[in-house]
Image (cartoon, rainbow, N blue to C red):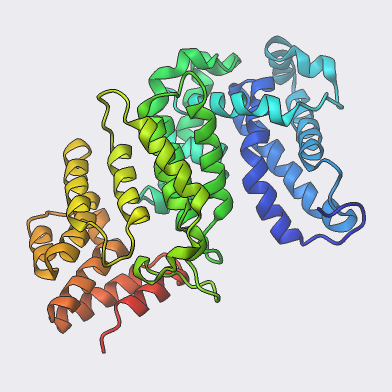
Amino acid sequence: MIRGNDPVDAPGLVEHYFRHEYGRQVALLARKAGVRHLAIVEEAVQAAMLAALTAWAARGLPEDPSAWLYRAAWRNLLGELRRGARRRRILEQTAPELVREGDDPPVPSFAADVPDDMLRMLFVCCDEAIPGESRLVLALKTLCGFSAAEIALRLFTTEANVRKRLTRARHKLRESALAFETPPLASLATRLASVHTVLYLLFNEGYLAAHAELAIRRDLCDEAIRLTTILAEHVIGAVPDTFALLALMHLQAARLPARQDATGALLLLEEQDRSRWDDDHLREGAVWLARSAQGDTFSRYHAEAGIAAEHAFAPSFAETRWDRIDELYAMLERIDPSPQHTLNRAVAVAERSGPQAGLALLHELRPPAWLTESYQWHAVLADLHRRAGDVILARDHRDRALACAPTTFVRELLRRRLSLR
């Protein structure tokens, strides 16, 4: 680790610590100040990270970066809360420890204090008073540090809508009974499904990033696994759905080392060197999948983990049990209807029974605008028409897929996959 006056790669450093520390710092300070002041807490943390960019680039990484950021964010927060008579009264009433402890707070034990605070903050972001769409936006922004553009891509909406939802969520938090304290986890069990969704989206952003310069964000996948593990080991989250979600993450993470070539280009599943798949993640995935089988629960995460397991444990792409994957997608459609699942199922049907069978399944579908405007829809149709011998339709859908591709990495993958020679 860089210490003292050693040089620091500032842009890489900020990216790393923003992703690893942002949510932890927000969660700790929100517990101190109350979620009523969430927007001010976020601003304080962001300002501390900007200060770190300058200070660490000039002087090197401090001995304890997390503690440095916490102290800097604390001072920023305290200064902002002290401004104005009304805020001072709120500060004295709702967070007297901020007043008592002053500008140099005791630094929390990040290993011991953070896990519960992170979970508690995740559940707070999923308050039932906040509309469902705004809950996701709030959690992805507050605890995961996602930009408005990243959230917009994942939720199939616009950046303007993301900002509106974020404003609405913060307003609801200020109005709610949670304004003066962060409640105990035990009182928040009804929000577990929303927490699952946030963690699922966090992992997906790491697995296939919306970032212009990074195709995969391993740190986001690791953070999603870390948070979901904390949830699975806590009494409030130790349920089959959580276990299945964690199994899915491990099984997908196992393939990360083989998803890019030496140049950083994305590789298709059939192109990946399976000997590079991570055995530890495969074992963990199998263990959590077995634990998820307890009781009668069968969720979307069970179905998706089952699909991931079929891919992960198949001896080769050609030997994949596509009939089993087709069945699991059909089950997924029944318990969580979505045209996206039907699109994915069409790929499995085409591998099992040929491209015409996959096209027939999609012909019966009436896709919504958000799907037909996505690159996935046109990429699948381009591939199936190409394999079926319809070059004209294949070319049309290929061009539209390339135009809709969110990043250069995805565009180059599509260009290679959908080549018409």
